[in-house]
Length: 369
Image 1: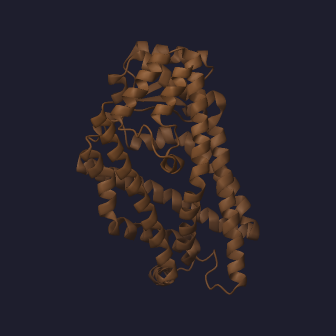
Image 2: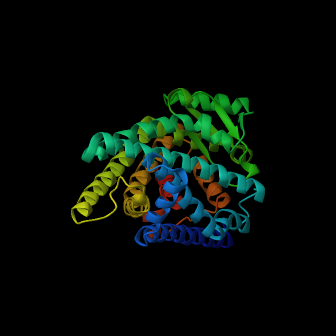
Image 3: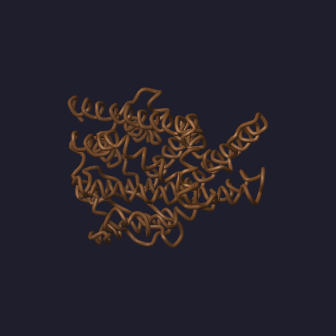
């Protein structure tokens, strides 16, 4: 990357950091204001009158859907700039406005459906387990995450991208040989039409058990050599060898259980202090979402630190398994340019935004091997 490209990548990254923080801050202020102003109580009363029901299993999801809809409308300009205009401004997106809007609807619908389902499970846990509901929710989270990981490649990803089997038989054979060498089982090698939406490139080993498969973006296969693609996938296979997905699920489940316990303890103290809205009341949903947002910010550095550590382990094993050091370096250089990566972020930015080591660190590791 020349100086102009490095500066462009830095400007793009800094805008993304700022917009991400702004969205998080606005989300926190929105939910906290809705609760503290008493608006959530009024909205719950309105929904109860509208549905002739006081069941939290109905009112809770309806309130959640209503609040998400209000937030999406009020803060649409920021979302539109962040995920559509910014990508076009820096020449990274090929997606039409219509397709972007449809993707936003699909992603929002999936996210809302999952959130409503989890909220109702929470109400079930509070009714069945009483004060121990947080233990039930932690166990549910582990199971739910595993199931979602298995379903994503066959249910969710096809909603956004077209699947096709990788057209290069020689590349597929090479990937299968690598998988056998690294003792990683996989179903097949697929390509997705990423270029219909973005000029960025990526590859992944997704799924679990019978749904595990390699996904290549067409933007990757068209611009990268077979050596470069092999070392990318060796990195993905290394994650499987080290059990990083399982470790990630355990870490996230532990963090979410800490969150549930903290919410339970705080809720009991609030009730003892005369609070009018218990956690089992749907009107408390905005407060819980505010707490979840704050907890996400606080716990993010730990999750990113663990992820960067696992990524370095995967890089080291990929280089050892393939011996393709120069291909790894050239691949990282290409990805940095193509994806406009921030190659050397400030420590604080790295702490909160980087779940992978910066590109320059990964290249330095390869050169030491």
